[in-house]
Image (cartoon, rainbow, N blue to C red):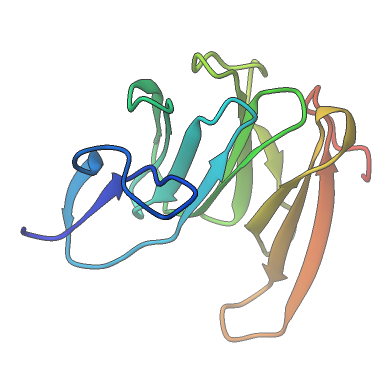
Length: 170
């Protein structure tokens, strides 16, 4: 009631609900639907990320419905296009755009940050994360839409982010 909230429900192999009722992850009371992403790690935890313009958020829920972490990323600027993926090292990487640059954080299942600071990917124009996929050795592959003006030509870009937070592709 009063807007679009974020809820999560675990299903068995037959598509039947496991939780008696859906778990409300965020009561947003927004009148619009924003971008969001969902991933599951090797332990069956579900992680969801979204941005609402003012902030980005990432939440991990255990298989029995406990909140393992709940991070809000904010600090000024317009937040958009949140993405999240589980990597091969048991952590998750969350990415989102703040204005014209994409920001990434690596989180342990307990919610502790692996990298001391966000990894940023940007440059001339807008570099907006559009997807994250796990790669080898705990790295992730990020894809981006890059443009100079909103109505101008768009290019697709890719970047590998290592498990240490470096950008080996330059």
